[in-house]
Image (cartoon, rainbow, N blue to C red; front, top):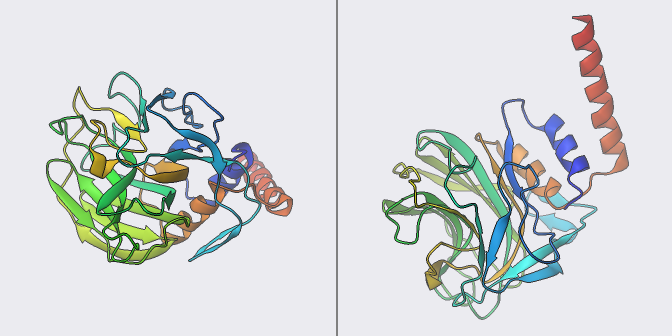
Amino acid sequence: MKSLSFPLLLLSFCLPARAALIASWNQDEASGNLIDSTGGHVAAVPIGPNAYGQAGVPNGVYGAITVTNAVGTSIGYGPSTTDSFFTSGADNVNPVMNIPRTGAFTVMSWVNPTAGDIAARSYRPISTGSATGADRGWGLALRLATTDGSSSTIRFTNYGVLDNDSDPFAVIPGNWVHIAATYNNGAINYYLNGNLLGGADNSLFGDDLAAARLTIGGRLGGNDSDQMSGRIDGLRVYDTVLTAAEIQAAAAASVSVPEPAAVSLALAAAAGLMRRRRKA
């Protein structure tokens, strides 16, 4: 994770020019506030206890995602009955919450659910909205329906409107999975470890109003069924719909430093592009 200068530079050449990374919370902090490395959001303030400095996503193959040169840490949240999350800012003026309900975005996160605390809970790496739900907004979750992790789903919630779930799958508590959802004017696609996992034409989420806040690791208001229990790593939001290949690349970059050869190729490509533009 997490030397972001190189991963973000590399990813900027891998993703199309239209795709902008508008939020990246790397979970590498040793204590204190949670920082958005893109600079688009004010530091998120901790609410309740958080376990800093936990092991992050290790090298390995996760479905269609291959992680190499993994560095950095993660943050532990929960248990789910404990208010343990971060809130960003004292208002609702930020890039994530300013995405219009008829717009498009991609939200993704690595999640490692805690074993023994997963009965019928929605572990939310990110959420918007208010404590009462009147300010609508949306949230991404790993929805665990049973204690053994079977019949799990990725859930996109339009608060006050609708919960929508991916196709079911089995997750092993204590193991890392990457979850992602793309949203395009109400149409949603889900990705588990970089692979498409169904989709739906969902109702539009309500625009975040004055009392809404951006929350990381839970849902504002202390709803036990919506609090994270486990670790989060590499949480990101893009302002467009990414393809499966782009999601895979972004997931790997969020926890890895690219190989020097890959960085050299990216820099060479950038230099060539700049030379062509000068000649033009």
